[in-house]
Image (tube, rainbow, N blue to C red):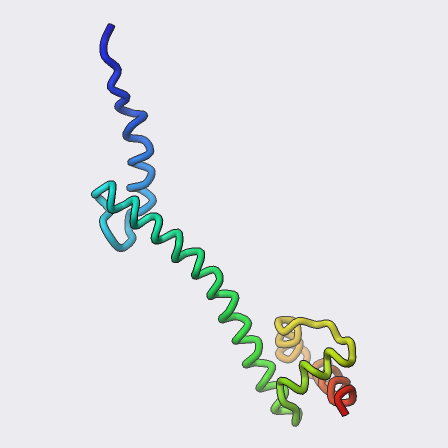
Length: 117
């Protein structure tokens, strides 16, 4: 009976990792370095997903700050007034309202102003 050398089964996982790492920084030909590069890329990808959320929140706060200043209000006063007036809109929705419907944002800002006064 001939000796089985497990050729295809052994190459398949290596080819999968080398294919996944192709085009990225680091070695794309050496298996051990490709394995390490793949692990690092997955770690950085996870961190990038967290950073994206952080940067979007900063964008929404910047937009709200500009919209509040135009109405004679500070951002912190708007958030405090919304909490006191039981307006439960998050920063994303508030910034979208400020851009898309300024009249509705005027109403929210006036309600928040009345709640803190």
